[in-house]
Length: 346
Image 1: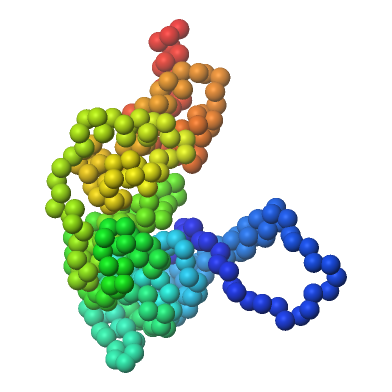
Image 2: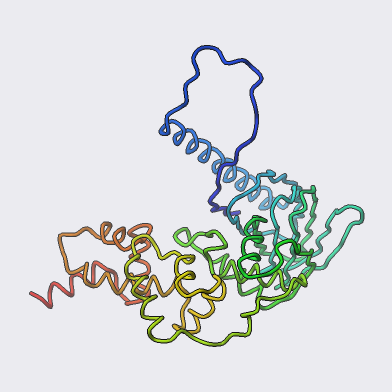
């Protein structure tokens, strides 16, 4: 089971009853940061170790039980799980987040030990199950009848509330449980999120177009309604689109802020994302990456500049990310393009 989350530490709220001995002194910001980083490394190591144990038990074909920590995650957490037909999987967890399960391939019987009654479903390829955050402990047993690939996604409740409020939907309206749901739009959003690489990791839903689409679809399936702009098929006029492109070009290094761009045109984030895609044929993320590659052509003419510096100057997370995207769009690596420019000029 490959887990590549970004986890944020939470305040445990514990208090110490022992009296303070000696003069009290606040720790420096550097020591606090080092402590947080150490805790973060330990927690990631624990998740990876648990995932390795999980995978080894599955490979042996044994039935396994795992208890997921009840941390109130402040970011989206997604991971894949391959379950062979000879093993059953039991997941015991407290639903402090919204939990979504997608069956990419295979299928089987899933039993939800919910109070006051149990619920059994037969899952097939393409089915989606959704359990809202109710702060209760749930036990789910999945018995595959064929080798199955499952994707698990945990969504912070505050993300859903913020997105609903920003789109004019009643934030108090809660999403309901979905069993064995076949929905094309949900499947498309999940596949986009699950295909994210380490460079394009799951972002906060309010800043991610696909995440917002997923939340809005879940709200719609729960009977919470849709935003008023949902049927809008218009595009930005040339002048407005030009100002947006200028803003993107000026903020390539730090990544354009979706909320700032929404304020410039007076639209909600999801409305803006849809209208931008209709106007350019690309999502904001893909459009920004193409503008970065376009800007890199001029920077690559400077042969004394290292490729890593060029990547960071344009807002890429690493040189490998820059090289991969440059190769996908141009058919050659940045180093090869630089050599061609040198031969042409020389």
